[in-house]
Every structure is written in structure tokens, then in C-alpha cells.
Length: 174
Picture 1 (tube, rainbow, N blue to C red):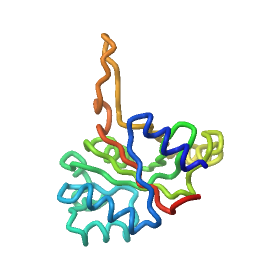
Picture 2: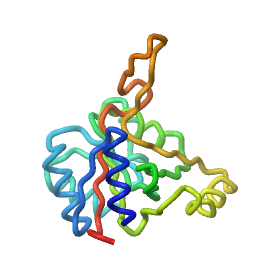
Picture 3: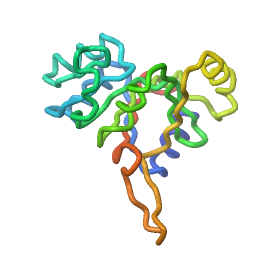
Picture 4: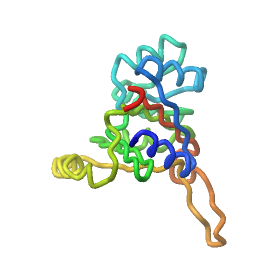
């Protein structure tokens, strides 16, 4: 139930969602969507980065000599720490400022999210957030592509973050 609500709320916020049986299937889907683009992998386990590289995608890893490559990346991929069904939001807990920059700077961000990490409401993440913040980490909730309104009420997409947000959920149905 939380998975379906999450997907519906994210779509309402302007994001897109795909649901996959496993991580390999989710990464293959991403390869098809982003193939040929320069991608910055953030908070991405080495096995997922290897699958992307094997598919011909250039992956710039934070911590490598190209760790500031987020300025040249066309897309970023990261593993979200959690999802919030009631809002369609994804949660990232980060240690370094370049992780935030890598998530928000490219035009497109793809978040990989385990179906087991989708929670009904934000209150269900209180302990996780308290633990992270008390250790000096940063927490970011992202709900759809970045948007803002100007003085005339015109909505502009992508000013303070990615213009495109896609969440690839792996683990199938809950």
C-alpha cells in the first residue's frame, strides 16, 4: 500500500516512478533512460556503479580525482535513505557538502529506493532523522523536481535543483 501511495504522490509532484523486481533490473532501466550521459553516482554502492559502467555509462564517483564533476554531469544517481508515502518524498542523509551538490546540480536526478525503505509518513522517520542530525549529518527531503514561483506567480522548474526527478523502486511489491 505504501508503495502505491508513494508513487501516486510523487507523480502528483511532477516526478516519475518505475518499479522493478530487483536492483539489477532497476539499474538496467536507468541505463536505457540515461545511456550516453555523464552521470555522477552519489551514495551508490560499488556493485551498482560497476553495472552502470559495464553498460557504457561514464560514472564520476565522489572521492575520485573527479569528485567535483557534478558541474559537468548531465545526471546524478543516488540511493535514497528512505521514502515517505504520504508526500512522495525521498530522504537523503549526507555527510559531505559535495553529496548535496551532486544530488541537486545536474538537470536530472535518479534516485534508487528499496521498497522496504518506504514509510507511510514522516513521523515514521523521526528516530532516523534524530539519529542523523544528532551526529552532525544533513538530511534532505526531495518532493518532485525543483520548482519555484516568481513575483507574478509563474512556476519555474529547475531553478534550485534538478529539472527531472525519477525514482526507481526496487524490491517489487511490498
